[in-house]
Length: 197
Ligand code: GRF
Image (cartoon, rainbow, N blue to C red; front, top):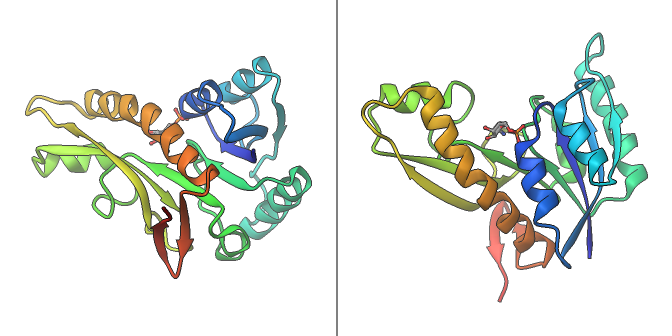
């Protein structure tokens, strides 16, 4: 059973889905938030999962990432999951966890990296959008994709309507992708997400 640490910054809807989906392949052993009072922390506590807050304010990126790394190493996770974690991690930190660090992004990567995803998708009049679970590499939102799910984009969609529709599939996609990684069915090899038989 793989030990999983989850990093959050806010409401933790993806965290809740990952907690509910825990099966023999993984166990969430620690939830860390960079934001004091993040609603996701209460969800972790309600599930009996250890939590820690590491505020980022007033710290350099390297100092924050260093604290985060020490906290993570202490929990001995096999996998680190970014779930609504709103910090850009330094290259050094990412390299220390490469192959064990995954994220979910609310677009069909490699399209629409970065922020304001839903606004940009609507502006471009896309017919499809969705969510992507990917390995984290130093370049933002550029890591090899593990799994994706699509949703239709309606002409009268507002960014919030689209965000809600995408979030719905995220909550199903993330647990499935985590289980693939936790059961060694996928691995990061030579910069690719390689599926083993
Ligand atoms: C979600 O849209 C997800 O795609 C992005 O962060 C947002 C909030 O996630 N990574 P959560 O509700 O905090 O899990």
